[in-house]
Image (cartoon, rainbow, N blue to C red; front, side):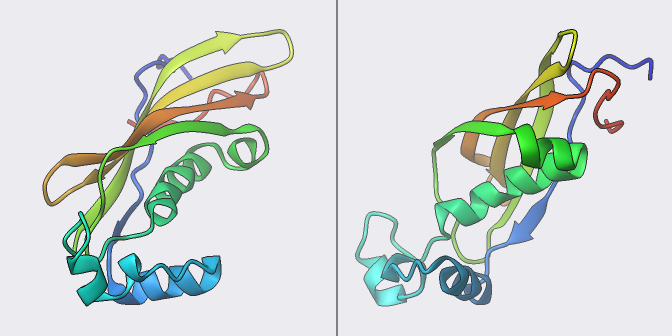
Amino acid sequence: MSEPAENRTLPVAALTITQERLNAYAAAAGDFNPLHWDADFAAATQFGGVIAHGMLTLALVSRMLAAAYGRAWLETGSLRVRFKGAAYLGDLVESRGRVTRQEEYPDHRLVVCSVAVVNRNSEQELITGTATLRLPPDNRGPAVD
């Protein structure tokens, strides 16, 4: 592949925040904090309304990286992120990412990506961070731009 790895964009993963989705996530994760389902309770908090679970929105980053790198992400990937904002009911949120650095070693290639989750309604960054993974030396990663 002739294109440089640096600045290669990663495939977008997106979802709309709905109460049904929050209820399903709460049941799967065992996280029944009323901030995620009780409108009256949530209205009295600093958020002013029901918000999505942070880990639900963060899952978009992993979904994006799994789409780009498959098993290599699942087996060797790591994340460092900062939560900067909340997603509310009705928000469309999406992952964004790009390769920022690649280092060659005899037995692997280290890939570092800048990652984020953004509220498409407002373009506010909700999560920002860095993902790192190891690829076999002959694997160039995603062919997307």
